[in-house]
Length: 303
Ligand code: CP
Ligand code: NVA
Image: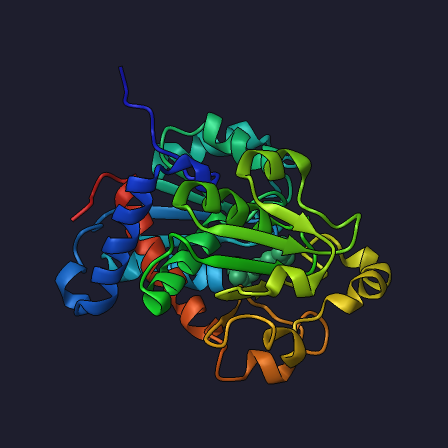
């Protein structure tokens, strides 16, 4: 019987040991000359299906495959009209007969699950409405680089909490043993199932949430797909901006993180995101290293 492929749809698809294996390999890849690992994936192809725009996810996967000696094919939103021109299941069946690995950025989380259920090769969630697990791998790597540990840290998230980044972070906290607390207005809280499963803390007061935090995180108030609610969201979330006053409540050496793209003047001020506590570009670069490690893990090519 054919071996079932490993998929990465949720951060909970990885055990604590697997996360540390991937982060350790990511660190090794980051510090090694590119020429050392540039043949590991020769003749291997990743197909990248995008239902939404992207800068970091596309770049990091495509460049990552190139650096490992493989190739990536970009299917832009509208190219294959998945679910419209043909079913999600048929897309997965056809693609997995040719490609070695699939990455997809989708609206509905059920779409990525359907792709995985019908694929004979690993499927990676490059963002769904529910989770953004690749982002969290890069974030964990960044926090580990700066703080030298993950366990025992307090990570505070402020803003729109019913959000893919927040959900994946909350779930990661349970696996890795750090505290995750989120603050946002009622109606913009983490999904109750995720909140329960993760043991994270959800509240309305930014100050209480951020007090004593080692890491302060936010994300856009208007995620892809929420554009029609812009006016309402800006009104309801306006008191949840990460600004200097809020950062000053966190630990003195707290870092600021944001998955990007950022909307300065909304969820974060320029002063904070462009200031000395911000690690957002290190975080963005780590998408590349952590995902190269993830691909090698999923393809059973751990070195
Ligand atoms: N952080 C992130 O996923 O960025 P993109 O939407 O540009 O891929
Ligand atoms: N929460 C954001 C993340 C963008 C990388 C969104 O879904 O649009």
